[in-house]
Image 1 (cartoon, rainbow, N blue to C red):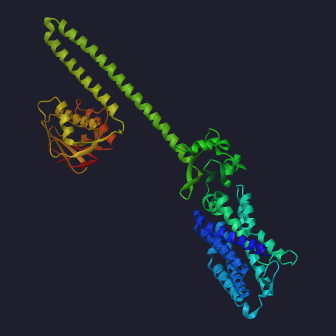
Image 2 (image 1 turned 90 degrees about the vertical axis):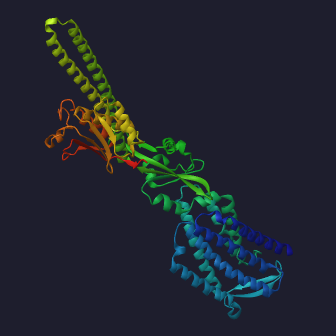
Image 3 (image 1 turned 135 degrees about the vertical axis):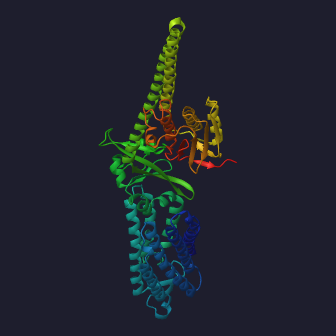
Length: 562
């Protein structure tokens, strides 16, 4: 009957090899506690199978009993590893609680001591020998053994309960995984059958065979599902957040979702395993879009809601195995953003209309002035000799009025164009701006100088126009010198022209005020409009008595130019 012995040894030998070889793939499990628990279960299960092999070898009865004792101790430790694994895998923390760990260790050491000392007291088991179906030691079990065995099976059943509770709550198809878990308990049936003399089975624990099948199944056959299904994913990523969450695999199939997702998308109910693009095509499309904003409800203020979709990759061993799509309610923010966008579009439209109006107004007024000037020239050439002196005075007055009107039209058009914010700025030196403005001021009696150069971040064209406007003011205000300087974040423009009385300073920036004179009335509002477009301020120092001191504040200066 050595063939029977060979079958037993071969069976447990394959079980040991399966357990030990499967330990190499345990590292694929990302959760450290689950990894430790599974590794211990496989290692102890393999060791238990090796102890059975030793007991079945054709060696002395004493050696067989020694292997049996080793199997008893290792087998009991396997129960502990199973419970540790089940707790970690299902997302519980029983395996981490100090009181439970201390109680488990004390129980294990106490029972192991009883088993190891059995040769002294003989209360756990007794031995005889038999030659059926081959020569080996027969274990006659004592009362303590049945108590310990009952306790062990009761503890093991707790682990099964935790695992099957998790599988039952999962929305994925877990039938294959559930069957593999069941294989770890099937060998118990063989052990119970072996207790009867009529079966021909040797009385020993066959659980290592179930552990081996479980190891190969979960780490080689259904590895992806085994790794993805644990409750800690649902607890930590799905169930504990308020937003709707939909989990899809790497093929875009729906794998899981939380209650909030069901409330938002009733179509998800019992749609596990179906493509997201078929069940919720809008959700699939928006989740791939850059802005990620999805609209739900009717297009009105009461029912329309906006959600921002964030697709977070789920990885395993540096490989993407799926995505968690989180839907965050951003209705209030999105409504404000859309209102602001509409207002900006209206402002842009108004600005364009204002530009068009300014251009049209300028064109029509200049055409009218050109016609008037033409008639003035006609009057000047057709005047009689007797009215020459009167006509000269009249024509000169009309021409000056026309020139004044031309300046007013130009200033109004510039003001309409510049009273807007700007986006394009650049670095430029103050000396370049002052020089460009000087070249456009047609005045032989005005001298312009720069005290100190610096580099600014500005819109070059607008800053040049601001200095040009200041130069026109200085020329019309009887100034001979214009000096530009810097003071921290301020540009100063000093002229030696007629001072502006302190009581009139507040009026120089007002529209329609002929302050300080009719010729200069639009220049300071224009300077203020240009400065405001940069976010600057323009002030006049009322205490300066040697002319006019203009202060431009809030200027961004990069560095002093060498």
